[in-house]
Amino acid sequence: MTRSPHTARLAALAVDDDGMSTVEYAVGTVAAAAFAALLYAIVSGDDIMAALTGIVQRALSTTF
Image 1 (cartoon, rainbow, N blue to C red):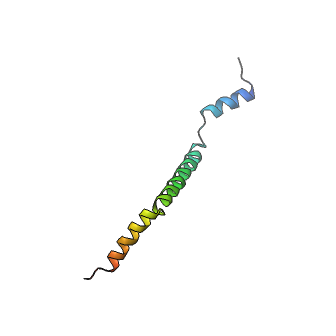
Image 2: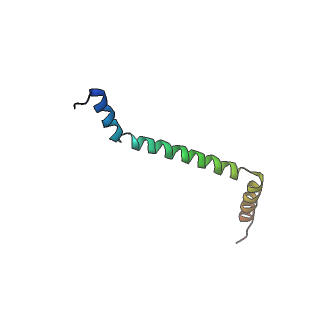
Image 3: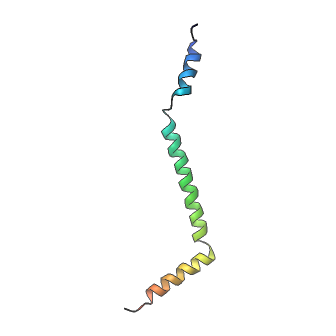
Protein backbone atom coordinates (compact mmCIF):
# COMPACT_ATOMS: atom_id res chain seq x y z
CA MET A 1 0.00 0.00 0.00
CA THR A 2 1.46 3.36 -1.04
CA ARG A 3 0.77 6.60 0.72
CA SER A 4 -0.52 9.65 -1.04
CA PRO A 5 1.68 12.77 -0.85
CA HIS A 6 -0.82 14.38 1.52
CA THR A 7 -0.81 11.41 3.89
CA ALA A 8 2.98 11.30 3.88
CA ARG A 9 3.15 15.03 4.66
CA LEU A 10 0.64 14.73 7.50
CA ALA A 11 2.59 11.81 8.94
CA ALA A 12 5.80 13.87 8.79
CA LEU A 13 4.12 16.83 10.49
CA ALA A 14 2.80 14.62 13.27
CA VAL A 15 6.33 13.71 14.37
CA ASP A 16 8.13 16.92 13.35
CA ASP A 17 8.88 19.30 16.24
CA ASP A 18 10.85 22.05 14.52
CA GLY A 19 8.50 24.76 15.80
CA MET A 20 8.49 23.62 19.40
CA SER A 21 11.24 25.98 20.54
CA THR A 22 9.32 28.95 19.13
CA VAL A 23 6.19 27.90 20.99
CA GLU A 24 8.16 27.39 24.18
CA TYR A 25 9.65 30.88 23.89
CA ALA A 26 6.20 32.35 23.27
CA VAL A 27 4.72 30.61 26.31
CA GLY A 28 7.69 31.66 28.43
CA THR A 29 7.34 35.26 27.28
CA VAL A 30 3.63 35.32 28.07
CA ALA A 31 4.29 33.79 31.50
CA ALA A 32 7.01 36.35 32.24
CA ALA A 33 4.74 39.22 31.20
CA ALA A 34 1.92 37.89 33.39
CA PHE A 35 4.31 37.56 36.34
CA ALA A 36 5.57 41.12 35.77
CA ALA A 37 1.98 42.41 35.68
CA LEU A 38 1.21 40.57 38.92
CA LEU A 39 4.30 42.00 40.62
CA TYR A 40 3.43 45.49 39.42
CA ALA A 41 -0.11 45.15 40.78
CA ILE A 42 1.22 44.00 44.15
CA VAL A 43 3.98 46.60 44.44
CA SER A 44 1.81 49.49 43.30
CA GLY A 45 -0.77 48.77 46.03
CA ASP A 46 -1.17 51.37 48.78
CA ASP A 47 0.06 49.17 51.65
CA ILE A 48 3.21 48.07 49.85
CA MET A 49 3.97 51.60 48.66
CA ALA A 50 3.62 52.90 52.22
CA ALA A 51 5.89 50.16 53.55
CA LEU A 52 8.52 50.77 50.88
CA THR A 53 8.37 54.52 51.44
CA GLY A 54 8.85 53.97 55.17
CA ILE A 55 11.85 51.73 54.58
CA VAL A 56 13.48 54.25 52.25
CA GLN A 57 12.80 57.15 54.62
CA ARG A 58 14.28 55.24 57.56
CA ALA A 59 17.33 54.32 55.48
CA LEU A 60 17.87 57.93 54.41
CA SER A 61 17.42 59.33 57.92
CA THR A 62 19.87 56.92 59.59
CA THR A 63 22.92 58.58 61.06
CA PHE A 64 26.29 56.88 60.89
